Length: 281
Image 1: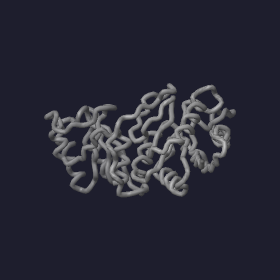
Image 2 (image 1 turned 180 degrees about the vertical axis):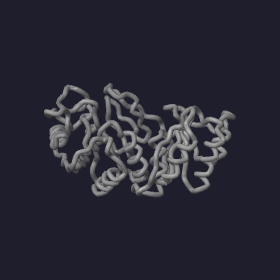
Image 3 (image 1 turned 45 degrees about the vertical axis):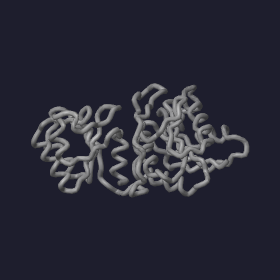
Image 4 (image 1 turned 135 degrees about the vertical axis):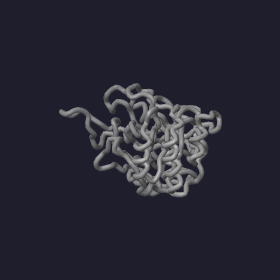
């Protein structure tokens, strides 16, 4: 068995210092090596510097993808902080669609050696590499979750993640992440149309988190801003602010004006998955 470890950083690989928890090189690599079955060969690609997941973005996704593709016959574990795990899960799931690879993401709410969840999550991640089922998964809190629709629903508890079912992704048009200006914007009662316009003027596209099953305020100025952005070639993809259920355009008259602007229907996509869709398609 060949195992590729990509260690990006995160709580799982931190240790106590005089200034609090900080990344410690070698901690995750040693913990993985101690747990490998007999005869397994470990290759480690360790980010330098190790990153808090708040700093992970498109360039780092590209590095992960390049490393995974450079080791086509290896099982893969990627250790990563929890705060942007949902973005990385969506990014790798969509970018690797159709490549028949199995990647296991792993992180923890407490570091190794703190009598928390780190050791159990690593054990689960290693055991999960034995399967040949393709896809990207998260090993966390005793569960193996599909990583394409992750939601971090708790900022403190060990059972921090849920997975919302996503539609089977098409093979993406792009396999890596280009330098594009994209963002997730949330519509909220009273949001100034001028603020949305100012944001969209600086963006190539955006995910819009809208209400319920697909409604928005009947603000003619705001709707005009959205329609103008679409006419100017900016891709706007709508998702629900609800964690589950997705969008049903036409279900409510209150959404008619919004859907007439030409925005895309993200269906049941999480905001993270919708953002990655815009990046790759």
